Image (cartoon, rainbow, N blue to C red; front, side):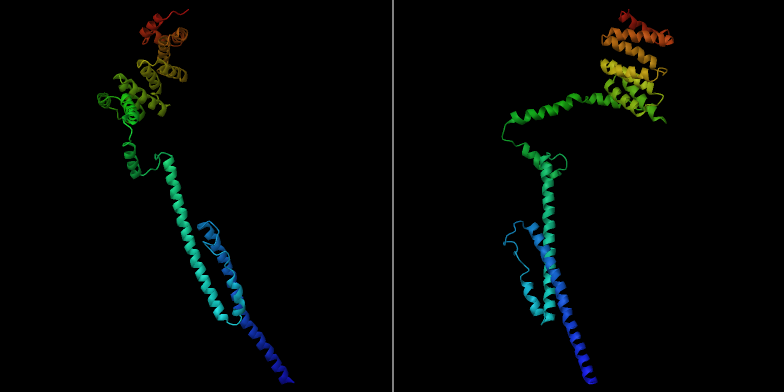
Length: 312
């Protein structure tokens, strides 16, 4: 009885051991089969991106037909089934890598093509390579049409800059005026503008003095700069541009060193614009606000301006 029980227990243990030994390959096969199906699905999805079409010319419609027949053989030859699964996994992974690389190459080529199209639509002015510019220019010159279509379009563009640009003699004369170099850069900027105005280079003085008053709005020379900028426009026969600077300099600081000058020049500007009413208002205010200047340093200019208008 004991021997029978021992044998029976041994037999049950052997069966359990045998079942465990056969279940491990089956579990490995099931896990491998799941990985295969996942990889095959990814390959099909990537194939549809690389080869849009979806028909049998590019990939088989069903790849999962073969694995369905393997479970029966895997139960008898577990080693062969696992080896086959690993082989299929390696093949699918290699195919997936090739398709991924091909997709990335295609995407990069598409991006480069879109950039070239954008450059061509923009006229090639933003990021056109030098070789493309060199290739585009000869294409525009040898047009079959005579000079009637292209030459007249090119000549005004060439003539406009030369008409607005100063002559070489004027450039040399302006360059001959030295810019001061002291420990006060703001004063140097004003002094350079004054030298340009004094030499009669009014447009250059306007540019230089505008730079000074905008860059140094709180400098002690700013009242001089705004007043001189108005005079540079007035001397250049531009009273409309001169008037705002005279008015601004007077209103910004009525006690400034050149506030009285600007008010008197504002009256002179109104006379040039034939605005007698505003000229009389400016002259009357100048006489009341700056009697010392009206009877002193600016007396001659004040009296000349009074003689040019009839104020009630």
